[in-house]
Length: 102
Image (cartoon, rainbow, N blue to C red; front, side):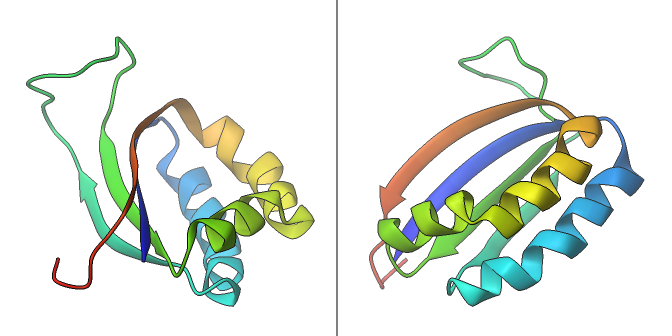
């Protein structure tokens, strides 16, 4: 299992919801899923100056599946249509192999 932890600053909740609705079926096609998803009210410590109000994990069967998902033209189209207008900042917190015991 491969996991990606991301922090976002969502500035348009409705637009972000449209993005999620468009990308989740594609995510499932690659064996991917959201593991955790949080709205964050206060960031106490960060390694970036970018604001963060949403933190989530994406899980994939492998790193190759994750890379194929993000390169899929259908995903790129959904991202371009909804994500960029709804999110002002994106912070990649971690990419890592996840053991089955987690």
